[in-house]
Image 1 (cartoon, chains in turn purple, orange):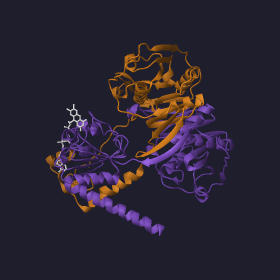
Image 2 (cartoon, each protein chain N blue to C red):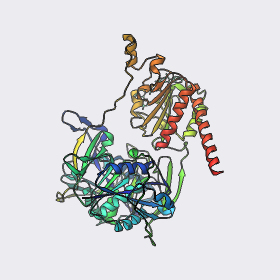
Image 3 (cartoon, each protein chain N blue to C red):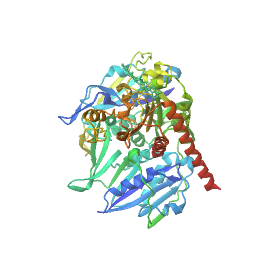
Image 4 (tube, protein in one colour):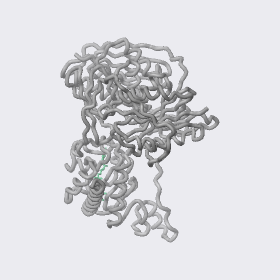
Length: 340
Length: 280
Ligand SMILES: Cc1cc2nc3c(=O)[nH]c(=O)nc-3n(C[C@H](O)[C@H](O)[C@H](O)COP(=O)(O)OP(=O)(O)OC[C@H]3O[C@@H](n4cnc5c(N)ncnc54)[C@H](O)[C@@H]3O)c2cc1C
C-alpha cells in the first residue's frame, strides 16, 4: 500500500527554508523510499510561489498567514487541519520538526484524531521482517539510554524529529500539484504574539546560549581580557568559567560551570586557560563542540576538545578576534554588493 | 484570587540512573520529581506568597512507583490529587488522558507544568492535556509576568539567543522550562495548616497500545580517536603520543590540537567556529 509521507516544513520567520527544512526532506526520503508519495505542507508568511514550485515533493499545499499569526501555533493548527481535509489518503505519516511551534501542532493533531505519535526521533529505520513498520530511535533519561519504539499499524502516524539531526542541503524538484489553500477566517487565539528580541550576550544565561566562553586560572593576569570580551561580543556568548575563576573573582558565582556549578548545553564551548578537571568537564558534557586554548599541551581539556590550540591566550584570542572580525566585514561587504 | 493547578511528574532521577550492561536494563537509586514541574510549582508558590492563590498539584504515576511525598509537602499547596494506575508508564498518552479526565471536573484559571519530562523526553503531556480540555497551550516558557489576573505576558526562547514575548488570556496551560527561576533546594514557604489530599486508584487502561517500546539500549559510548603513532617513534615517544602529550610537531599536524599559533590555525578555528555557528 502506498504511504503518503507528509512533511510540515519548518521555516525561519515564516519566510525562509533553512537547513532544518532540508534536513526534514532528507529524513523523509529515507522512509519507505520506494512505495511512497511525498507531500509538503508549507504554512508561511510570504514565500514566493516560484520557490514552492521547485520543492522536491510530489504535491505541495500552502497557506499564507500574517507573520504575527505565524508565530502562534494555534493558527498553524487551523491551517494544518484545513490542508489535511484535502489530502486524505489511505495511509499517512506526518513528519514535523520538534521546534515548539510545530511540536504543539503535531501533538494537538494526533490527540484530536486519536492517532499515535512519537516525538524527538533521532533515527528512523524500517523494521527487520516487517518492512512496512518503522523503528524509531530516541533518547531518554537525558541521554543515559536510548529507546526504540514503533507505531501500531494505524491509518495515520505522527513523528517529530530532534532538531539537532535536521540538517540538510537544498533540493529541488517539480511537484505535480502546488495548491494554495485560502483560509478566510481564523478562530482568534487567546495567545497573541507581541515581539521578538535578540538577547544580548551580557544578559544571556549560560544555559540558554548557543556559544559559551569559559575562562580559568590561565587568564588571571587579566592582560588581554578585553579581547575575550570582544570575542564574547562577536559570537554572542556569555562568559562563564571554572571554580578557580569564580574564586579569583573573574566571574560571578552563578557563572561557574561544572559539578558544583551550572551544566551547559551550548552548541559551542570555548575554554580559555582551563585545565579541564573532571569536575569542570562534568558541566560541559552536553556541549556539542569544544574549542580549547591552553598553553600546556598536556592539559586534560585537549582530550575533550574538537579543536585545540596550544598557546598563550594573550596571543591566540586577539588573533582569533581579528580573523572573525575580518570575516564579518567581508560578509557585510558582499551583502552591500548584492543590494547595490 | 487565582486558582492554579500544577502537574508534577514523579520520575526516576536521571542523575542516579546507571545502565547495567549485564542485565541490559537500568539500575537506579532514587526517585524524584521532574525538575521543570517543580520549577512551575516554585513559581506558583512565590506568586501565592505575594498575591494569594489556591494551588492544587496533580501527580499521576504507576501504582508500583513510590514517591517521596515529603518533598512536595514542603511547598505551600492547598490540595494534592494523586492518580495511580497500574502500568501507566508503559502507556504513552495515557497520563494525559487520566489527567484531563480529572481536570474536567475542576475549573482552574491556569495549569502549569514542565514542557518536557527528563525521563521519557516526549514533551507530549502538556499540549495533549490542553487539547483534551479544549484550552490553549503554550510551551517552552522561561519567564512569566502577571499583568492582570486574567492576562499574562510570557516569554519563550525557542531558538537559543532569541526571545519571543506573547500575551495570553487565561484559562491556559503553560509549559515551562527549567530556567523559569533559580531552584531553591529548601523551599522557605509557610506551611499551610492543612493540605487536602485525595488519592484515586484507577483501573488499568484496556486500550491497545498504539506506540510500543521495542527495546532499550545503552547510550552510544563516547569514542575519542587518536592518531596511531608511527613506527619510527621510540617506545617512550609512542607512549607519550598515546597519552596525548606528544610535542612532536609532525605528529601534531592534522590532529585536532594545533601546537603552533599561526595564521593557518587561527583561520581554521575561525572557519570552524563560523560553520558551527551556522549549524544551529
Ligand atoms: C568538590 C569539588 C567540586 C568542584 N567543582 C568544580 C566545578 O563545578 N567547576 C570547576 O571548574 N571546578 C570545580 N572544582 C575544581 C577543580 O577540581 C579544578 O580545581 C578547577 O576546575 C581548575 O580550574 P582551572 O582550570 O581554571 O585552573 P587550573 O587547573 O589551574 O588550570 C589553569 C590552566 O590554564 C592554563 N594557562 C595558564 N596560563 C595560560 C595562558 N597564558 N594562556 C593559556 N592557558 C594558560 C594552564 O596551562 C592550566 O591548564 C571542584 C573541586 C572540588 C574538590
